[in-house]
Image 1 (cartoon, rainbow, N blue to C red):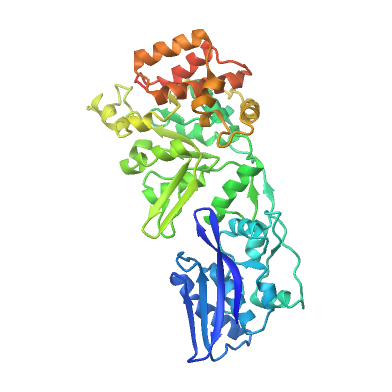
Image 2 (image 1 turned 120 degrees about the horizontal axis):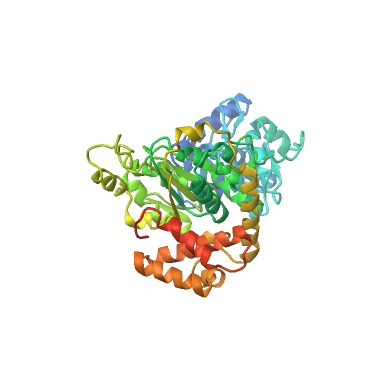
Length: 504
């Protein structure tokens, strides 16, 4: 007889169904796990053997073979402990085989039989629901997995509770979803004195999810402005929250099983490796660009990142997804994020200040900003200079518009875009529009078209730059509640595109 329990193997944010098959055969006692297990899965036999021994359950003196099917798919992680233990318990008659065949199980076993929380419970619950099965997971994962309403989730704390539940002696109640956290309070944009043009750029970027580059001397407020961007963004929609939470579940970042409606704000250090930013490493884990999905990726000291890291951003920015290819893994992660980058104008940072600039001006600035390649610079919709604030202005009271007022306009513009793109796959905001969809929503008036054509010819706009100007102009029109893209909207969009006096 062969007993079967279902579990999952992770490929990106997808949880692939895996059958854990267990069989007993006469012969010398042995416990073998086959089906491309990694080291953690192979060691499961010792954890299972010891945990069962702690419960006074002796393994039979036979050959125990556990097969993880499909056998050609790599299996990684300690979450295979519980399904292997369940399959073995069903094979020796401790729990009913028909009961364990109806569940998808995952969880790590400690040596005393306790169940330890593992990553990926949320996508595992999605796979279980698709297969018409319930999910059995550790208590520490129950609140996270219970967010999938189509799946019954049971979250025991130990293997003993699993056995009592499966045999009907002590049935467990279904797990309940964790708390939903909304938008929290954060630094307010009214605290930033001056920098009105940079604030306007933040508003436009937030409204249309446009990529933004801020350049200014050290201490001019670039990081301060970026830190206030989350306060301008609307909360995640239900579908967006689930997408983002699935990625964070795989990374082990969900706090006590709760689903957050706050958009992610990731700010990696400029010494981060390519695997940390793009994804990869052991098991091809998601990188910062995927952890920032539906949110913001803030990269301070942008030119200081390794050139290879910066260049790998180009394709994900365009496609909204990244494929991490390794010798033993080929996984895809979504990464529709808003890139906000900050940079000094040169290595010393004082290119525009003759009193403090280094002796290599202006070559210093050209070399430093030259670390950002033309194709990557072309992908920034908005570019704004952030000049130093006068000391006299620092003593003045804060009189700027609060974040709540700007956030209300951003939310209204996002609602307009949601209605505009309803029913269109892959398009949620103006930054996603391209081709016929962009022509339909952002064709400017005759005067605006003339201005854009003149700018394109005079400054040598690329085709990408031309279309990005149209997207930004459409967002500016949405912020004003205008139905059509007018010349003023094109003019403002162009002003942000050419703020450094360079071609797009």
